[in-house]
Image 1 (tube, rainbow, N blue to C red):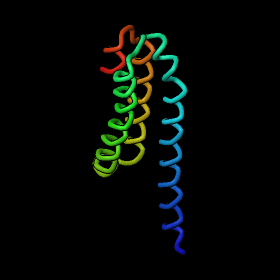
Image 2 (cartoon, one colour; image 1 turned 30 degrees about the vertical axis):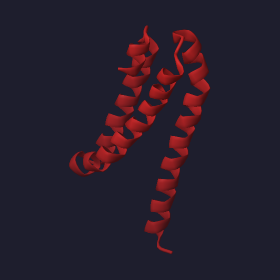
Image 3 (cartoon, rainbow, N blue to C red; image 1 turned 60 degrees about the horizontal axis):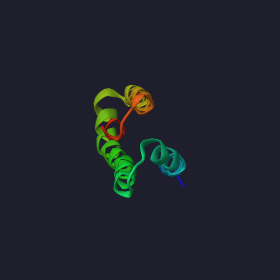
Image 4 (cartoon, rainbow, N blue to C red; image 1 turned 45 degrees about the vertical axis):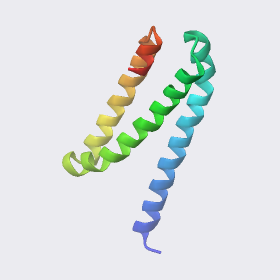
Length: 100
């Protein structure tokens, strides 16, 4: 098997593992968010759905960003967006602030 295929398979596998890890993190954080913000089941579902939506948007735009700006810059953009999202969640005072 060519090394390119092995690298592609490992890269795709790593992406799946990290996405699964994020799903595990939200399942661990959801009870705390639910208790702090007194979330209804529908609001909990919406918060978890936003994670899937963000993953879909990232998958749809990731290739374009890499082709247009290069891999290193695309990784930098996603790192900055991840950091800003963490700060946004940290500073949220309401349910709408979490979901914005």
